[in-house]
Image (tube, rainbow, N blue to C red):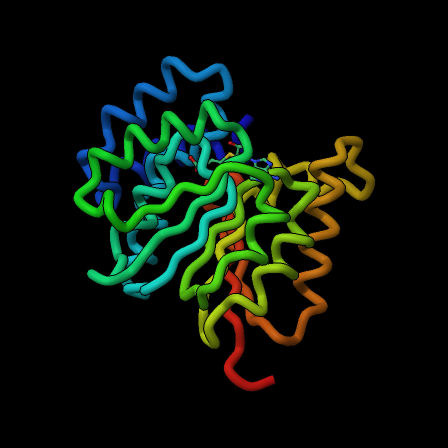
Amino acid sequence: MDFIHPTANEYVTHFSNATPAYLKEMYAATLSNHPHAHLQSSWNQGGFLSFISKLIQPKYILEIGTFTGFSSLCLAEGLKEDGQLHTIELRAADAETAIGYFKTSPKSDQIIQHVGDAKSIIPTLPYLFDLAFIDADKTGYIEYYELLLPLMQSNGIIIADNVLFHGEVLEPNPAGKSAKAIQAFNEHLLKDISTEKVMLTIRDGLTLIRKKINI
Ligand SMILES: C[S@@+](CC[C@H](N)C(=O)[O-])C[C@H]1O[C@@H](n2cnc3c(N)ncnc32)[C@H](O)[C@@H]1O
């Protein structure tokens, strides 16, 4: 269920053009064929990720939650020529699908798929990331954030998805564990003085988090 009105989503999508056009087929294939198609970022959110990546021109990108690879390929758009995007997916079948789509990318050699639990994989990555996207299980967000922070460059940007969780975070006591976890994550972020953040009402809510240079 979308929190932002579907007509508003259609409108903003119509007036945006930052999503890589070559992704149309893979995006549509996931929507039509995958039983959990709703997990895929929206077309326009993909454009936003691509736009931010082109602004930052990151050397190293980390994505937590590949699914079938749409957001990975959007994030890869701004990679430096010698850069790498590392993306982590728990479900082997989805990672396999993503690897197939990555082969269609002009940056295929720069995309590294990790398969397994992000909580154990993140600490093994010997990189400093300029850009990261948190989009896996909502109950893990605080842990992902804390694992990521020391691996982020100063001024590096973390983007966290689903921070409005279908609007359920607006309720004082939401029933679902994911909504509760996102509420706790949003509170956790607010208290952290080492980062600056702005929450945006794009699709299901995105928070942009910048690691401060000096705290
Ligand atoms: C919302 S989907 C990601 C959507 C994708 N980023 C996109 O925009 O198209 C979340 C993904 O995180 C994966 N996931 C869940 N728990 C995980 C974990 N502990 N480690 C790695 N991936 C996980 C799920 O299998 C699922 O494919």
